Length: 71
Image: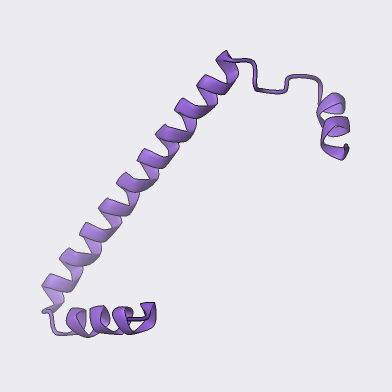
């Protein structure tokens, strides 16, 4: 099953909901997306902290960083 046909099925199901149910679904999806983003940010922070503590982070002046990026 392709993602478009799955999406079409979901949209058809949503259209069969009442307006109140559709609004509740939208709120629920927004909440879940926000939670997913928070989890991703938290994981990125944890990874960055590990990399910083193990010395895998390049530190220097803006000029040094720009020079490193140009390599």
